[in-house]
Length: 211
Image 1 (cartoon, rainbow, N blue to C red):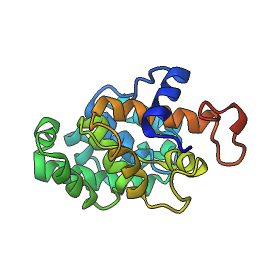
Image 2: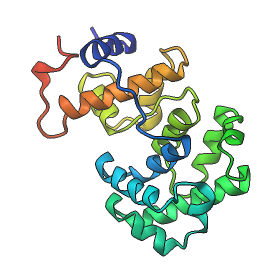
Image 3: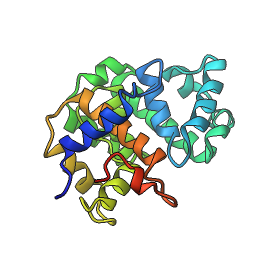
Image 4: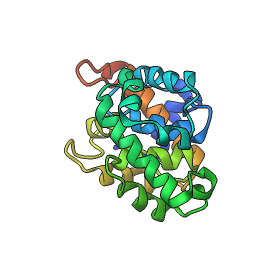
């Protein structure tokens, strides 16, 4: 019998407890972190964010006014720093142009509209867009990452080559649209992926979802 989203959540929550995600001091920090965490660990992202905080730059207008080369140097710990500087500036330009760098104004728009907008920004893909929507703007959308797809495919719930939308629909079509639930659920899946469902050496027999 295949696992259902509700039973997966209950098993993970009873095993790990609340995860209190996303680690940030402001919605804007979440947005920057979501862009920087592409293809790197959160530990490296924290170092880059620390650089920005140390120089008092973790504000939309201040980051946008910073020359791209200087921004890139501050982002070195996050890896691919030249690419990420460009992507971050693309987002900052969008935020300034469409919302005058006002996060509350942005949050007032509906989810489908915001998602289309974010995906139109060069360098922002589905996972990054959904992370910004869920964790920074409190919109009820389920974030899918490599951990999520690996866990679902190993339990026969989706195919290994399934598209992002298929993995997302597994949750969105079966769960109540609840921001807190989606927030906690994604964090629990990341915890499971890191501690049990690793790419090379999964601990299947000890997995909370086993049996």
